[in-house]
Length: 479
Image: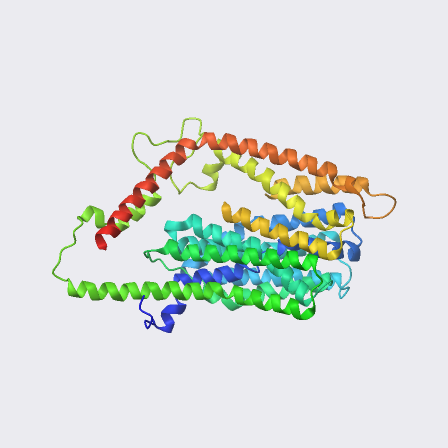
């Protein structure tokens, strides 16, 4: 790219890359539910809850964060006409309302609410995440249809990292004050969302080398994860002064500005290529395209990329509805009639249920092992980073059963005397054995699902390889 080339300011703001950067920054503060353990002990002590009541509240958090029907309906109804900002605004309002009411209750600014009311507050606060997720992820898929898996992984990955980001902000500003952290959750995610939601728009354009700039976002995510992990570990080993904590926080803010520069660079590259192409076309106006019409019909190729094979080897829905059609327009009811759907559902319930049950009880796990507050915060932060890595590389019912019927019930059984606190390795030992067994069963069912759908994905992979070969051939001719 020419060093003195500068596109207009308007084109730098209104494009798919600016939308992706804005979505990433919103996702960086959207995962407040992963930090439940930071303030769960404050909820438990100020409201005089036992562990079963606390895990019931945490289950409503999981329900709110995973039931995205309303956000999906709102996005479908408004995104095409008004843009995704309305969905993001609805999420910001819910986030503020839920956490602000919880903060008022914890600080005794209002009379102590009934557990059912606190469950409602938690449900509303967590439900906001589905609106953030829907607006950012679905818009990303619309903007990058050829790399939908990549953009989904990026958005989900930053959501996973958001827990560690929020905790670092908390430790810098509100150290050892969980009630103030709830207020932070009521203010920071909504303000951040309102600040960037106007940039999140749908741009139905196709560009060359999109994966190059998407990989830049991915590389930034890995750098951010490494930085957060380093800071967290150092904080746990050394006692950092206020000035050092302020310095690490300032470096974090500078790192979080990186997606903006990546987006600017991507748009400058696109604009430069467009101008260069127009100049070359003007100079070669009399030359014919060396590729025939079938090869240059990029719209047809794009459609073929998303369609699935129509030949005799295509896997069609059998008489007993055991497999899906090789198509993308299957609705929920149609999917629920297949065995593949329920195999995937069971696998997700086992894997996500175990993970959510763990994160919902991290604070009490640390307490049972006599961890200090900083060590518990470190545990939650590191879990958030591993959560990011899992999302980057790659359920309500499971969470309810494991959190309430298993972890909460067994914890309360081990509580000695009249208190609400259990101390010792026995508090969670049997619960972890049960969750390990559940995770193992989920893995076995996932293996069954792999063999069940292997032929389906064989066709998908072959179709994508064929498309990639045709695309590379077209680019070679253009060059």
